[in-house]
Length: 125
Image (cartoon, rainbow, N blue to C red; front, side, top):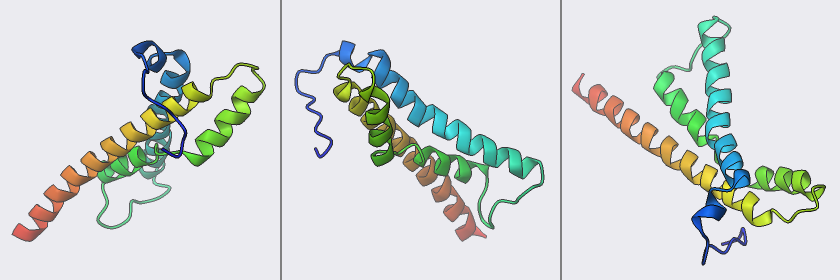
């Protein structure tokens, strides 16, 4: 609501436009790949260790949650498209919402499912 995006009358063409798809993929795929990939690399290289009780699946779920990005995404998008002279405010915000929602859902379900299994295993020990 606060983003000022009116979804009434939105078409699939608007949702599948290059700008919202690119922004959504940047938040959803780019953040996960960058955060998880760099953490995985440093652990495998022996530069660091995962905290006690954490494993790679938990790390992935956390990396997925990092794709939730609204305030800075809006700021960067406004700077990026300001110079273009084209009003892409709706497209930008739609992509941010889609990427953030997808990241939040994936992160939630990965952590809920994985941590739920870990708690059940710990209780049987």
